[in-house]
Length: 235
Image 1 (cartoon, helix red, strand yellow):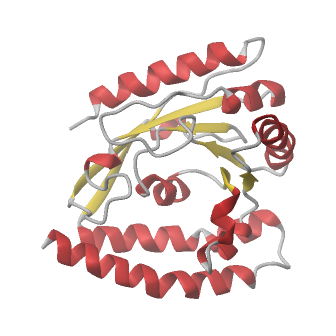
Image 2 (image 1 turned 90 degrees about the vertical axis):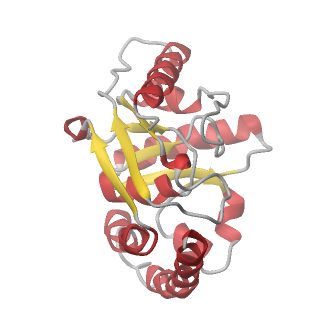
């Protein structure tokens, strides 16, 4: 049954993605925030499809910590689930992602309309300069900037190396950092076809002020909070 449900979800994803991507391209004349609000309808739709087809539901702990101002969101990355759910749960946001994603037919074209910060991972210094410059610009536009500090999806139960770029952007911009932990990888694993029914818990930490603090100090605090929180919501 899990395999059948996962196959149905994949089929619906293949059907809906070109439709939403085409609509996303048509939002080009609108301001960035308006484009985002229209395009994020795709994520909202897919979260509903996940619930009804695959039986994946979610709950949010710490909803009172949702930011009321632009901030840097540093989130655990285990699954494709959080790339959808963050758009449902958090205010308007842009993503730091690898530029190759924008080359994907339909999906990448629509993604490009959401004002992402698409970096070349092989260009270390150049990528950091781009993150700081474009990140500050997106924050001024009223977006939150979502960054996965481990850089890539890490299998459930494992821990990647946390990078300091997100904390550095927050410090240089004077905005708070919001840490996010979840256990989505337990139901929808890294690069996995199977999507198991169950409840995903997302925990949102209290905003961390960056005023007068160093980036590596903040990064270490975020890492400690996320990894400790995951132990509490593991099951």
